[in-house]
Image (cartoon, rainbow, N blue to C red; front, side):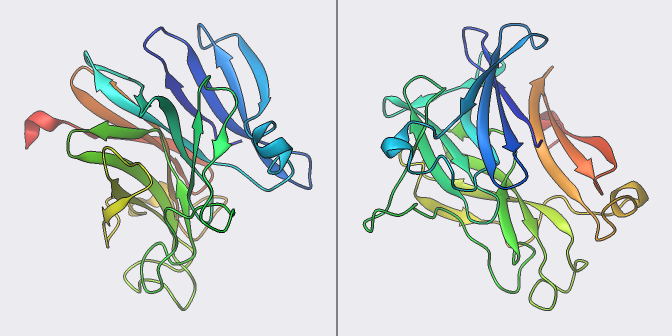
Length: 236
């Protein structure tokens, strides 16, 4: 479930998805040369730290990308590939081969938290990675999903609603948070975003495409439909 897709400069597609054996969710990787035929590579954290995190709950990956020659492609930073991941707290991980990933740890040898929920805001219940993060000269933009907690969230949005936020990280240190929006840039407004399998209302962002000088953001609506929002930089 919850697939996120990115592509390398060489044309290899990467699919990060959640596998679930009805006990534990595991972030997994698959690769493809044509977006049709896929090879499953297994859990992303299978080898890191002797398998320490293999059986820990993990999902939702936003691999670092950048815009190059009008293509959104996977980017190396400081000699490694980088991804944000997590569905309640957001963490980071690095890789040398795009298949095997090593979570970043803090001074206590535990997962280093890069982004977390905030009481009183639209992301008070959880913060979950969205589509691939984008490196720019002004910093790294992480688009993420926030859930509004009952009784502790932002009263301007429905309780349990999923809304979309933006966080800015340092362009040289992807673990260093600079700032994030206090209000969501995308939230349930339309009927198809508020009526479906998830009545709390959902805009759940997962796919980002740069095409013909425009940005296309694909998102789920109340767990029942898929929609797209378009940003045209030339319209500013």
